[in-house]
Amino acid sequence: MAFSKVMIIGNLGRDPEMRYTPNGRQVTEFSVAVTHRGRDAATNEWADLGTDWFRVTVWGDRAERAAEEFRKGNRVFVEGRFKTREYDAKDGTKRTSLEITADNVIALERKSRDDDGEFGSAGPASAPQRPATAGAPAAAAAPLNASAGYDDGGGDLDDLPF
Image (cartoon, rainbow, N blue to C red; front, side, top):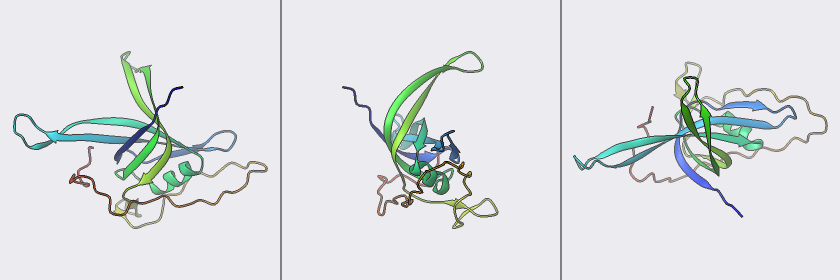
């Protein structure tokens, strides 16, 4: 038996993109940047040691809520199954994609865009319309959990890796 589970905390690198499969199931994709911080050996000061990018896929009702509530720059917790995928880039080089199929996503901070494109307290962005499916029951959407009192270990939440 094999088991693959990963948990990350990072910042969204782009707004989520939601779509529907032909059978009407929601799927949302977004990227999350995880920046590693530590002491620089030469200066003994805190510094960014590198950033890993993860491609996250969320399915079902969680996908719809993530698309509505998450925005570029949000700090999120993602838990799910991890896999790597190798592919050939357009320039012919081999690339590796770090991918997570999320079982759980939690907004650690919420931001939304107002009409001017600035972050503020405006409501969620409009999501794509669900295709009509016969006999599909409507599920009540529970809100995403927000972590009250999250301690990020002293890191600066406004210091985004992009």
